[in-house]
Image (cartoon, rainbow, N blue to C red; front, side):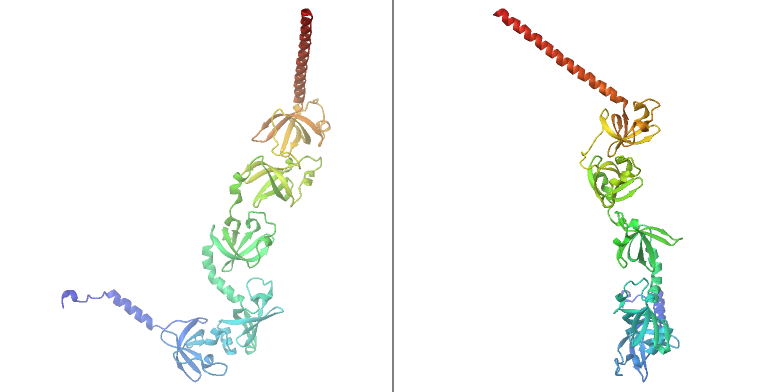
Length: 482
């Protein structure tokens, strides 16, 4: 054999790894009560069945576990069976019927002492709880123990096959009390650590509506952890009743808005998963445009009007015609009514739209220019002047010095609230929307008008005089020729 054909020696590290694995294979497996496993029947005795479950040693099972109702054996040596570990004291003891939900009283007692889950079917609802069939036994489950959340309709659980824990075992199994809630809470505690890792600000998570309150809904995120979905975060439209948006048991997707570990509070939102309608406001609405909306609420300073879902505009009380009565403007708006409004201002950054409720039959796009002679309604008095309502959304200030009254005059008597007065527009500030008015300027306008009329009359008279003289000259020329 040539040197090239020689088998190279194996590294010592591989020999060590093999030895470690071999030694580990000889160590007996460690089992826990409640563990479900599969094994192979290796020996069937008079009262006991031995099952190979891996590792050094075997598990034991009562022969009755593998017999049918007629006492006939249902398996043979070499068959694979599924069982639950009911005890590890003095050897591993298994139960096949516990795994199948067909346990006897003695096996149920083992399950009770070992805190093992058992399978049961809810047969009917009665006062205070449910009758549950566990194996061949009848058990009672209090309504508070059937679930972790309030059961509004008890019938929803009837007929369901659930896993329970026996919490009371009396009269040798004739009196059993079981709880499904205990197992759910135990599973939630196991999940809690993993679920909390996912709850971070900005994360989108699945959840289930656990309860609905007037101020919002609590969402179960798993692991027994709940967050609050406030009513203001359910949608871009104003929501007054959370039950119109979600119901108990609904599956939802929510976004984590905030986590307060100290207070144990989690804030959630749903509207953040939808398109923000304010993003397109700048292109959807322009100043001077007339649109329709729905009155959503009336407050002390004005009325909010929804132009589209999620977009509300404010009609300030100053944009309504003065009535002479306190809060009289409120008679012009009713919650739920559809109204036409004129867009006054649009500020997408501040999420504000100012509107004025348009008077029925009024012209669209009414503009006010300097020099115009207008008739307005006295709205209110201030120490520096009189505010005059000109049109929805247009109120001007008539300063004291422009009222064309004596210095000692009582402006409240001269210009009562609600009275009609003529004013001249002195100037208009398009940015601040301030309008300055004058009564004194009316005389200038009238004088200007009088001068114009006089000039027009004089021109007309001159035309008439020149016409008459020309006629006379033409007549004289005709007589001379004749």
